Image (cartoon, rainbow, N blue to C red; front, side):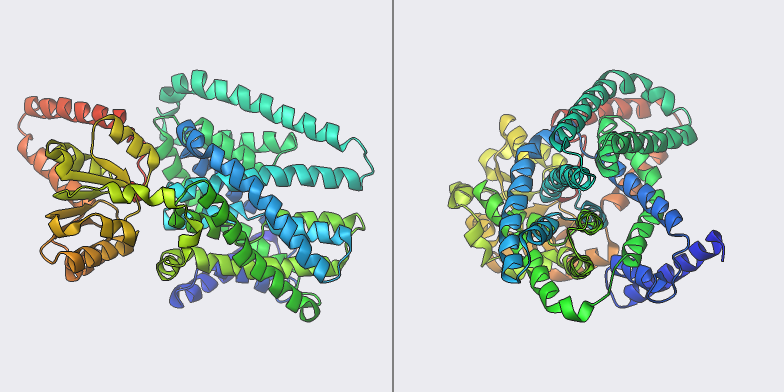
Length: 568
């Protein structure tokens, strides 16, 4: 069987599994991993082209990280850098400590204990990014923080893998190698920063002259830097992400991302198929009880550690909970680390099987946790208050009695801000992004930081006297909660909400919404009216053009160049 035939069969199996998952309303990632198990050595044994599949998976990983990097401007990196480092390092330390206690309790040696405990600390950046991308949560506050500390983990994992691989070769200069690797990375990052600030902006017009050339440039830039970083001792993931960040300030970053998404969606499937192929199920019966204990620790203990750390840093309970769920699985780095230990003679095959089973359980479990995180949070919210510092909620009780409350101040929310500014204290804006709140405060808007799904916040808003609430957050569950809560407090209140989905819009009307904004349809309607009005001449259209340019400039000044999903 040639490579083309094997790949074709694997894609057919992936398609069948995806269809079954779709019918069962299960995550497609699970279907891809099951495809790998079916195609692997335990069933069909289609592993002769594993090198090709591995190459495809590496391309998928690089493109995925590159697209994520396109949305991470230096402003966002500065915003979440501190919390990312503190949470990433803190979680690794605490998980290693408690994981060691569990491994020692099972009777493992000190060396085995350290390997197992460290393996439990690393979370899969690839899987989390895929899930966050599917949920369109990459640009949410918790999504940005999660990406930050996952990348910190990747850097720590890279250093540990360098130490282990060097020690296994008998080289005693591990510390020198680590320092040299870090120095090379710092120099390369500095060079790329200079290029992205001084050179790439001047060349962006040249790249955009041809859509095909822009596409090829993006692929060449992303894969090229990924390989350079890998050659210098770092991972492909880090190189691809930094390649994206260097283009994040380009005016064509969104266009580049949209062109690469179909490429990402195909090749990243191969990563999960390869993951399923490599799952070792040997001696599963003997190690299953221990695997279940370690899996429970990763699924529950790791999120709790992150929630505690983020609570201490004064983030609210929902941000901590959502970010915590992203560390509820082990990563491909964990399996590589254990494999290195086996090859060096420090670990037995049993340990590899143990960690593999833990990987399978936690990847499956965390996938469901993240996909249904909103529903889970709603049921646990009242218990999660223990992870929230009281000072983070004090601003809720300084709220006056506004006439209009706006939830979500970006995109569509900007137009409402402009309209209601003259109301002064009679208008209150609520947003989940502290950076936006800081900008609005500087411009004199009456605003507070808050979560639209925080029941305590809603109760503190004195909705009995509010005439209207407006939500420009295009999330059905959030808007359903707001409508229900607002009407239960004030039956005469008018609720204006937003949706991108026609069916959900009708359901929101059934829930009691006074009006549902459908941006895509409104935009198309307005554009057709504009074209019809000015078809006979361009003078009026040019006047409208000048007004639109001024409007866009005002929005750029407010920081709306990179709008987010939860702050529409």
